[in-house]
Amino acid sequence: MTTREPTKTLRVTRARAFLAVTITLLSALDLGLKAWAGRALADGQAVELGPVQLRLGFNSGVAFSLGANLPAGVVLGVTGLIIVAMAIFAWRATRTATLPARLALAAILAGAVANLLDRAADGVVTDYLHTGWFPTFNLADVFIIAGAVALVLVSLTGSDRAADSV
Image (cartoon, rainbow, N blue to C red):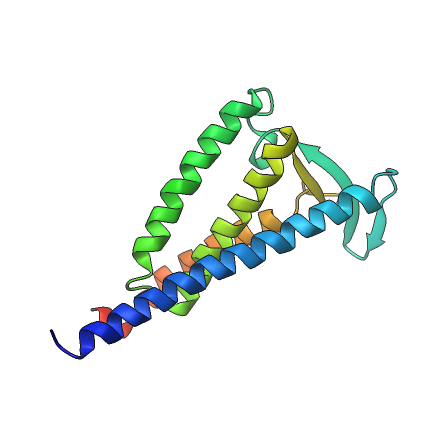
């Protein structure tokens, strides 16, 4: 056993802890904002914030209301399976992933977990960000899209793997 092995093990452990903490914090932030929006925007009034309005909406489907006519249990089950697969991938990827790649994975998982937890309560996801030209969405959706874009960018630039993992 070399002295490098414990250091690498410690790095992987820290990376995985960072992943879990980041997912938890981002999910909590989104769920908190959804709870706030459910109370503050319940009267149907929109709040103007420049190009974005705060307007309460609910989505029984997934992206762009796809699957809105499916039973909530089916949407929850399929979404849950996708999240588990993504979590396994992220857990394994932390062995070699750079900080930007780990942040991207954490953002995607945080958004997915927050939307799943929100949907588990009543079969719908709370949306509150409205632009007028795009479907109403929430912060979790922003996390998913931003994380996916960031993951593609770090992959294309080759900065998704730590130098000592090669």
